Image (cartoon, rainbow, N blue to C red; front, side, top):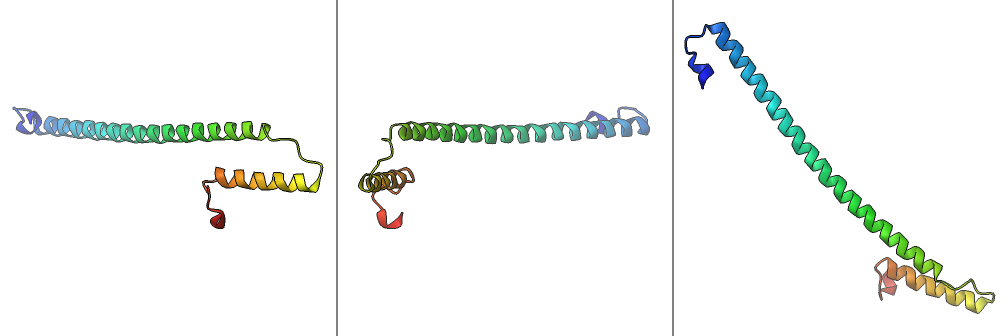
Length: 103
């Protein structure tokens, strides 16, 4: 490298140039590391945003289904049937489709 060759510069000048070169490399490496960390954080934020979007969509769908439920029945048999229907919907929404023993 030019600095190590010296090219007639006095040793103090060569040392200062070498120190400046090292500092520049340190700053450059730190900036590259910071950029990599920022890119990683951005990716994580995008993944979180997508997960939140999916959760929001699922909540909206569930709210729509709840709005479509019939009013609470007035007699015991109707209420029991409605409870059974809700249990089935709940199992289905938690991924327990047809696996009654495990849910």
